[in-house]
Structure formats: structure tokens, C-alpha cells
Length: 196
Image 1 (spheres, rainbow, N blue to C red):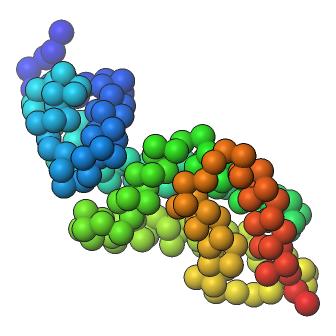
Image 2 (image 1 turned 90 degrees about the vertical axis):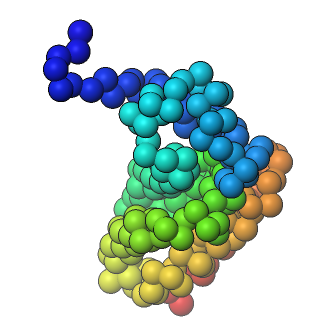
């Protein structure tokens, strides 16, 4: 029972339902084509119920994007280890695994990445990425100090290591291509950053 002044903020299940239904609509109708009314209808909720979870349709899209990026980052963090080659294999494996297991969310990430929607939220998204890239640079530092890897700026490192994998997942590959991509991209990344 609610007490005076309390608010029923809804359940995590309802929030997740909003996210999933919105994802379907964003993929089928586009970010600007999907409406708040369509999201509410698909979830069978009122606008009031929607607003208990999100402030706007755009907030749902930003949550989908940020949660996808954070899930990718968590997988990569878990793969970092004290061996340069194995760490690079882990980074690329975690990244590619996420896109292989989550093709709809992956399609959304690429759809929204360059959209006008993200312009209003670019500072928070950019900060999320910057902090993560700093973690990877810190992981790489012992390999640089020991002479195993070259010192590279974050933008160059990300482009060398992740660039081919990003291009690959954007091309909507078939599942049979992921195994080869994991091996070849890890080999290429290692060759690109190892000290000569």
C-alpha cells in the first residue's frame, strides 16, 4: 500500500519491457518515426506509467545506447589480463561476442551513434567512452614499460585495435564469419601495437 507522498516507481520488469518494445519500434520505424504513444501502446501502459521510468522517448533511446555500451565495456574489462596477446584476443572476443549475441541491440547502437538524438547527450556518451579508453590505456601501460607494446594515444589505439571489428559488425555479418574475425582481428591488433 502506498503511503502519502510515496510514488510507485514501477518495477525493473516494466522498465525492461519499455526498453525492449522501444527497441523494436526504433528499429522498425526509426528514432524519429517511433512515437511515445506507440511505445506506450506496445507496452500496454499509460503515459503516466511511462514517465515513472523515463522522462522522454529520447531518454529511452539514450538508456538503450548507454546500457549496450556499458555491457560491451564490462565484457572487455573481464577479458583484460596480464598477457598482451591474450588480452587483445579477449578485448576483441568480448566485443564481437556481444554483437553476435545481441544483433538487434547492435543494429540500434550503429543506428543511433551518428544520429541527431545523440547530439544532445554527446557529452555524457563521450565521457563514458573516454573513461573506458583510459582504463584500456592503463591496462596497456605495463606492456609499454616492459617494451612489449608501443605507446599510442587513446584515439590511435582504439582505431588500430577496434577499427576493423567496428567495421565488421556494422556490415551485419553472418554468424559463421565471427570466428574468423576473432582470430584475424586479434592477430592484426597484436601486430599493430607490439613493439618492434
